[in-house]
Image 1 (tube, rainbow, N blue to C red):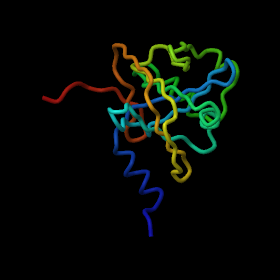
Image 2: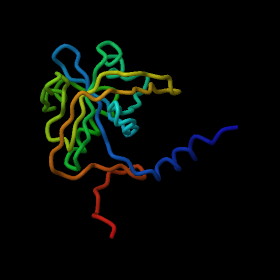
Image 3: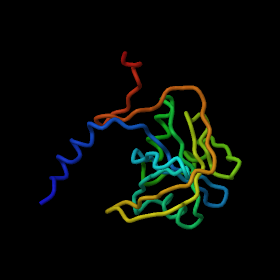
Length: 162
């Protein structure tokens, strides 16, 4: 017997995580999916891991094109997290999203704390998600503070512990 799903959610809510939006293109249109299931995997080669819902449009585009961007959100970007967490996004909302093209051509949200441009290195089934291992082609950072998710709410960092 496995853990009850409600208890599983309560336990996982105690793990503070950063918030990312995984982005991909369809033609000249950006798509994205909010993902807190993200981590570094390897330095040599540089690899990251991200998990996406099997029903995600972004997942389908990554499968089609084999590349994606990971946008590590700053604490001023809650709107982006909420927007890309939804199943459907209107054309008007998408037009409000400001993004840049990375040197490798991936869509990168403006004003993110950091970004990575990746190519799919491997993928694995993971229940109702697909687990992607991305080989990092490039990355960048800017000053700011991360958007943090803890106990079902967005948080800001309060400072260092001595």
